[in-house]
Amino acid sequence: MAIVDEVLALREQTLAAIEAAQNSQALEQVRVGVLGKAGTLTAYLRSMGQVAKEERAAVGKTVNEVRSAVEAALAESKARLAAAELEASINAAAVDITQPGRAQQMGTRHLINAISDEISEIFLGLGYTVKTGPEVETDWYNFTALNAPADHPSRSMQDTFYVRDLSGDEAAVRGESDVLLRTQTSGVQVHVMEDEPLPIYMIAPGKVYRRDVADPSHLPQFHQCEGLVVDKNITFGDLKGTLEYFCKAMFGEERKTRFRAHFFPFTEPSAEADVSCGVCGGTGHTHTGERCRMCKGTGWLEILGCGMVDPNVLEMCGIDPEEYSGFAFGVGIERVACLKYNVPDLRMLLEGDMRFLRQF
Ligand code: DAH
Image (cartoon, rainbow, N blue to C red; front, side, top):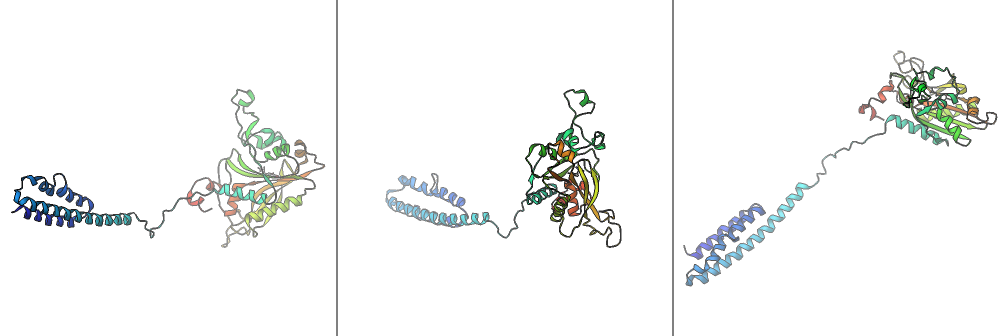
């Protein structure tokens, strides 16, 4: 076959291969195979010297024409494939807006903290300040300055966690330590009366510790919120009005409150406040007539202790009981949480079961 015909055949073959290339990679292979250093068309260009003189002009012209045609076809094909590939990659990476979103797991505040904050909000709204006190206390703040007699049962090793002094102090090693984990937030009353100017309108939420085994109504570590008001002309009426307001704000207008006489060493007179049971609506029984298990059939649930600050306590804290009077209260935060949401067992708050905790 004459060289010119060979080159023209190569042209058809190459254009067909360019046409058939499915992607830029395949196209590049075609280009290298024809126009690369060892390419088929390159070989013709290189061997022009061996072509017979009379054929050389025609062959040269044909080779050049074929090269131009091949280059044009390559350029056109390259542009077309690149555009298609760009579009395909955009489609592949595109966000599918019909897909459901990936849910982020959001944490929530623990119910105990939520209730503690809620109590603070209610009293902040009444103009009280929020105080804190140490969880490791001395006997003075936890008992003595609160008028607790030396032989009060709560001072015994069975009820209070004492902190052993490791310095080798004999009395401390025998367990007669002066340092303890506070059993109540009431000690904050003493700190505040000692440190702050009068009048006092404060609450103090925080952790307390008792040597109790956990059961539905006891925990060895729990939270209380203390309250203290000291001002001129404070009466039991102020106490009742304040705590009734608190109960309605916390539990809702439909829940009733009542006060029962009680005894606390640091208040006189003292009382305990109850809220009507949210499970049986204060009736003491279920709609089928069974005894309500939440309130044990009484219709009432105890939520706090309170009273008028004992004049002895005011005096020990350097306040003249002839000039000032006050009231105090202590609320169990876990109790409030359980009574508000009808949770039958305090331990459920601490089990870490997310199905339970997420509800609040
Ligand atoms: N501290 C008491 C307790 O832990 C609760 C209490 C009762 C606090 C009467 C008070 C109060 O401030 O006036 O049981």
